Amino acid sequence: MAAVAKVSSSDSVMILNDPWTSLYGYPIRFTTDCPSDLTKGSASGVCSAMIFGDWSQLLMGSWGNSPDVLVDPYGNNDGGVKIIVFSEVDAAVRHAQSFAACLDVLTT
Image (cartoon, rainbow, N blue to C red; front, side, top):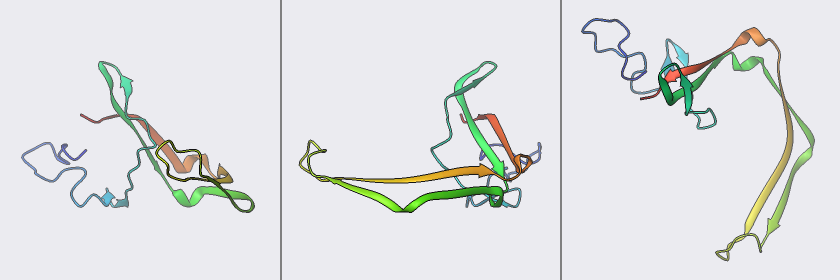
């Protein structure tokens, strides 16, 4: 989206401009948790997923009082200490209409 012009003319304003903090006036965040190897049509393995939503409609519940912390001095092969934190959380969507997913954003 940083290489696609908003207007199909000689306009140099792209859909996603630097600094990459908003998209069409909405705040934008990036993550590596969405797949980036999706396929659509002849674009094989180069499409990404994008989620647009009102994140205030996502409900998260935490089970238990606090996260469980486990210190494992034998888990690393390099002599370091491995620390594992486990927390039980659940997520639900208040209104499904508040979210949309696009699975074919061309990334190359």
